Image 1 (cartoon, each protein chain N blue to C red):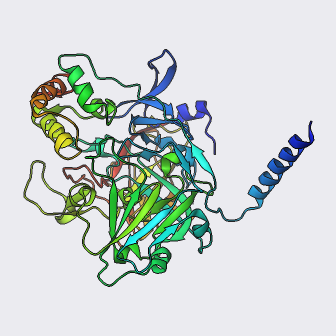
Image 2: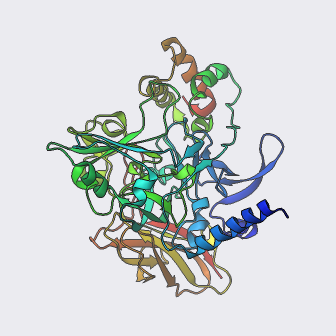
Image 3: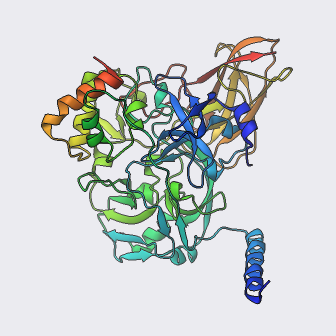
Length: 110
Length: 398
């Protein structure tokens, strides 16, 4: 074991001891890094699925759609319009009806 | 505290099954008890396997059996809910600053060292999503379809928001204090997630800027390095990765206050499905709730056991009593309350059923110190917020 690694080991042991001795936590120091897993979800196949993927998946996974209760066409219309008007999804007006038709056919009821 | 996988499966509060996931690896999944309730269980960074509502942005539900393990919810089991998909995956606490601006006498830029120099405060508090249990609404409503695990209880350490505001000095005419964190939308047009409290609430004693959770740094997915803690209030206000505190001289009119997270300004905040034309107010204090934690709906007590355990909490007055029923709420008896960790914390309770073997519908009902209790029939609002009906559990006793 080199002298350097012994010093590192000593620091690690000292840090471990101080962690046990600490009474109150203090604000964190240093960088925390995570790697979020890939989305891994996908829309069901069907007419309009490509359009829905382009409109929806840039902001959120398809699970946002597939976990909803079985919504009516009127409810899916309200959701798509909200995504465009409130959340700024780049959906052209002409794309709204085919996206709603896709969502209603695959994840909804008439 | 670490829960072995085998034990977890045995104690799971929902039907568990092996399921294939893309790529050929095998994972566990659960089926929550409502339509489209299939969910994978996946271990996200710094987390044990949790129930995935959506992977992007991450929305992860705590499996309910975790709540039977102790009064505090372990950090690696604590639920996760983000609104927008641009979430920093690397956060440098040394470089992080909280900008304090707006209607203040002195603009501040607070570092972790600045927080370390301020008096620390420790507080046990439940963090519960406004839409916890939304999947149980009848009729169903659109939104995040949680069962009951979008909540957790932790011991938070931080500094009083009031101390920060006093250091900055509020100008006359300050009305609200707005909080912003590091998450943002994918498109510039997406409203940035910001929440506001009235100055009086912001200056109340128990609102803190927390840098530790159960004695450890916050997991990144719970808001490392600092988040706002608003004990007693729904979690929408508990802004994660807090980066800006802005004192406003008017009532906040941003989307997340003016349009989203609002409840009917009606008795019990209820409306009839389809009703329109009612006034709304921002969601605020949590309602009293109680749960059984050692047996799930449809489950069985171990042979010979008559033990029931659970948790209760409210919006910050503390729990006065918990009652249990073995006949679906027709008759009630008092449970024993366990140690009090503070008025914002989960309060654990236990009870012994005095029944012969058979099938029973167990019910549990909490009463808070302000007298508020739970109703037998769930109310309804169009956003699926604030569920607090009496929970019932079909249980086999042998």
